[in-house]
Length: 359
Image (tube, rainbow, N blue to C red; front, side):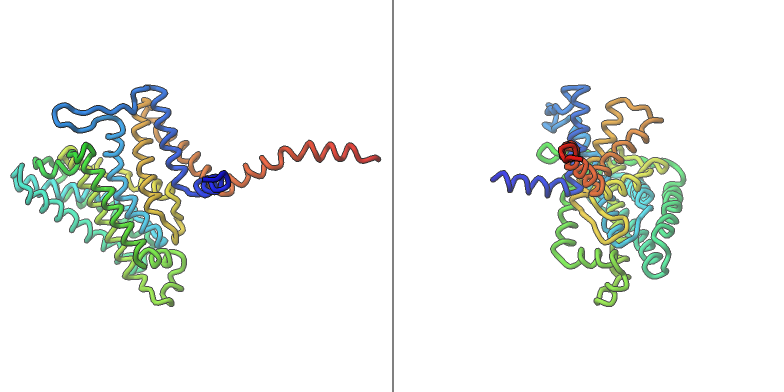
């Protein structure tokens, strides 16, 4: 590789929003290593041969955020937003735990699949409600999904009778706590889902049509695209992915906490999407960027706990990191620094030339 091609590749990379997300992840990990040099060390559990360590914990924690971030990316690309994903996670957890509790068979694979399938069916229906309100009724996405954000936890409380429901089912627990080749199953599942969704939207016209709706719904309709059907599809998909995230969350402890499951994770999903380079105005999205953004959010949450940041200061710490990252991603900020660097050496030369000119 020549120096010119290396420089060109570097300039291309720094203009990729997800590149700065990767830089932020490395910086946070380095900060943790400074406090504890053994932070990145991983070991093998002698009882089961699985890898354990802080990195494994981050991968497991990132999986649910990845799911809702991918769904949020598609919704935001249409010019909308889905504030209900956190509540849908609680609904999915409530449905699955209540079903398994009623089934009472701790080793049944069929019960685990039935619980997951029922949870995803319910969240798909609720996602369709969002889609109908936005696409066919004409409500603003913020208002339509805010309604379900508030009502979703109420639905979950009705399902569980207002109690935190626990269940026992080893196959269901394995989804969140199991390992394949030493890697958490939940992270492998999340990566596979991201790959499948990315392949569908980028290898077909679906991604272009979603972006076209976000850019100009009227023009897309005149071009033969049916915005209503696509909007309904994206909100259903967002609901299903939120349901998967809910299953992942409750599966680790086999208990649904209505007030805590998925609480404020819609904000983390939006942050992950923005970090990934998507435009909140619609018309642009990056699933790979959302993937990196979810990893960054999980790393940031783990760093906050590891550094012992107080709960009162945690929001401020996260806000500082996110603001710095967004400034690094900003073309206007980078252009300002480049202009300042280019102008700095020319100022003394101009003064010298003016001094040499006779009066």
